[in-house]
Amino acid sequence: MEDTYSLVRALLTGVGFGFLGCIPVGPINVTILNEGAKRGLVWALMIGAGAMAMDIIYFGIAFAGFSQLFDSHYFRVGIESVSFLLMIILGWKYLRARELPRTPHPVEGIEQRFHPHTAFMIGFVRVLANPAVLLYWVAMSTNFISHGLVANNLRAKVVCGAGNFIGGMIWFSILSFIVSRGHGKLSDKTLLRLAHFSGFSLLLTAAYFGYRLSLSIGQQIP
Image 1 (spheres, rainbow, N blue to C red):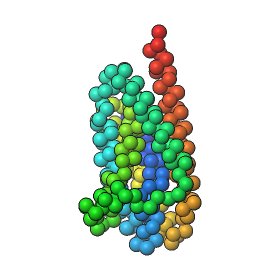
Image 2 (tube, rainbow, N blue to C red):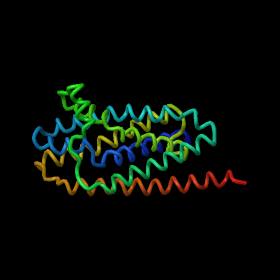
Image 3 (cartoon, rainbow, N blue to C red):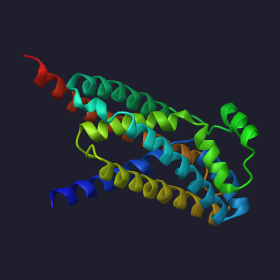
Image 4 (tube, one colour):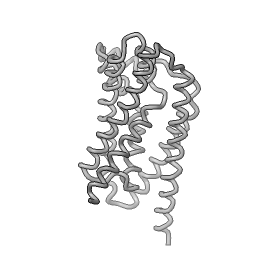
């Protein structure tokens, strides 16, 4: 029973933070916003699917990179501290966004190298060129494991990854549907507000994780 509860918790954690992580303003949302009305729902959905395929790769790298370090309390506290700071930086960045970014230079360089021609590959390459996604999952993976949201075993991580894909596709499906059916009526201002909401949510989550981290450090101080 406890094992089932652990997997459900990992799944819901992945869904929630997968959805939250896709809301911030970035190349994928801008691409769907610009092309969804012109090329239709399926094209926009495939951009989102390609983005989530690369997102899962970053997710796997982040979760695989820190598993053994949790055997040491001091390493765990150090990693948690760095991840806590990353969450604050990312949350503040999203909260303070003032305009929708156009295609960033790193994305342009990657696209010139790979020449993506399908919607799926456009989404894949644009996430590949966005290191903030990897930073997001480095911060999340450390805190998920250290605070018991995701057990430090392969099955829980796979379930969390599946939840992440589901959560991300829920957001991209909503965005794609609105844009394709609304003929671009979703304004830049609305998307920015959603990004601000995501940033605020990340800062609240960081505050909670910071509180838990302070308790963990306090218990080790004689």
